[in-house]
Length: 325
Image 1 (spheres, rainbow, N blue to C red):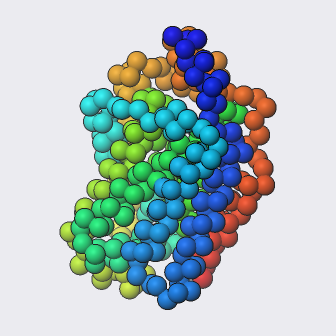
Image 2: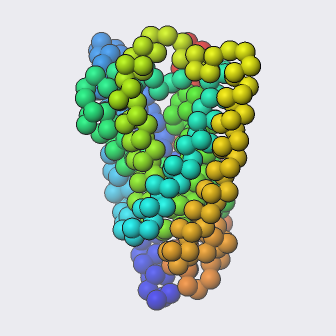
């Protein structure tokens, strides 16, 4: 069995870090280019703006992997998952909601909520369209890009570095300081769940559950969202002012702290039901039973290159523009 998977890897080495950076850079530039083009053409409807960027995030990684002659299934870890893994994916998102809510509220003391305006514009196109654009498309496209291309290609240099750096880039990819903190958190646990199940389907499910629940609750309270869309939607507008702010933050903070051990337990349980070990997830030299899942660590890989620098600079500049202009 070990020789079989070794042969698969040697014949289909997947994406290099440079390949991953090139795909990330092109995707980022195209995303921004589509938005500027839409504005230049006078298209201000939220649907084509968001759908255009989401399609670019979906199509470019797939095309890039094809051009690089990488085996799609092995590169992106496209593998079916069991029902227990699906349940754990849903459970970890439910447990993560207080953590996400806390990070969201903390960021809103400094910047306005970045999702309300977009959500209000999409809700006008109906529930199914909103779910397609806000939940399904990001769950597939962003996971192909971040966990499939970026994480998997960086993993050849260092699994731990790939885990952390891919999460940070995932936060930067949202290009606003409001979503960045909780996107980084989600990026960290999505990689762990991907390693636990050895399948990109798991973080795709998590992504869909997270955005889907938010879209579902937002759509059926869209009157409130639409009222907020024209105003400053910050921490004060949500929590009020005075002593109530501290009480609300402490309550959400306590709930978030309680949920952290549950998140860890769910991740470990996912490893266990898939016959994998948490302690082996990021080792460079895995035991024989797991070597097929970790064959690609290569010390000569170099993550930092001009493609990555350009991508990060573009994301940082657009984040600053979105925040201060």
